[in-house]
Amino acid sequence: MVDLAMHMMDIVQNSIRANATKIEIDFLEDSQNATLTFSVKDNGSGMTSVTIEKLEDPFFTTRTTRRVGLGVPFLKMSSEQTGGSLKIQSDLGTGTEIEAVYKTDNPDCLPLGDLSGYLVLLLIGNPEIHFSFRYRIDEYEFSLDTQELAEQGITELSNNEMASAVKEYINENLKEIYANRKTESYLC
View 1 (cartoon, rainbow, N blue to C red):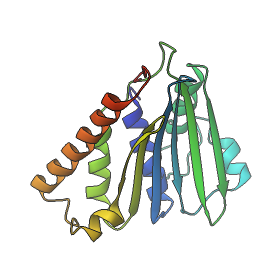
View 2: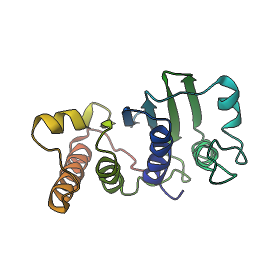
View 3: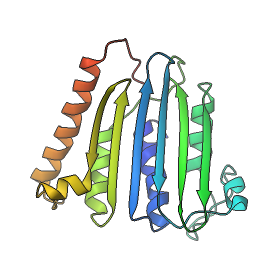
């Protein structure tokens, strides 16, 4: 994975395969401590403690279409290369939370990539799932929730014009967060 948006897509795809109906995606940047915490929390099928222990093994996967599962090992490696960490919590039948912490002052910190583009793809491809996305830098925050979009009448994102408008809305809000921050923030 070359950026955090690709990691987001990979981890969220795991949540979708686990039959999640609600997925929360957070990017929380703390400029004072030079950290970026990326997390995905779902209400999917969850995992046993034995499965969690095996997740870091690239030759373990629950998928039957291939014999390797590189997403979580790559996420762990990329976060730890910056001096950060990876934490996985899961309970069978109730869901999973994966949290990767990156040290943003480390030159090995991955760039964000096309967060808005990947997020819109997830929304288009999974209209039945309740997505909640949050990006925060210190006290400045942007959030997007598919239930709130539906309340505003935005339900058909497969329309190219609507998808483009939502992507632009995300990009503009992320730019505004960076413009308003009080301290110099390092955008991975």
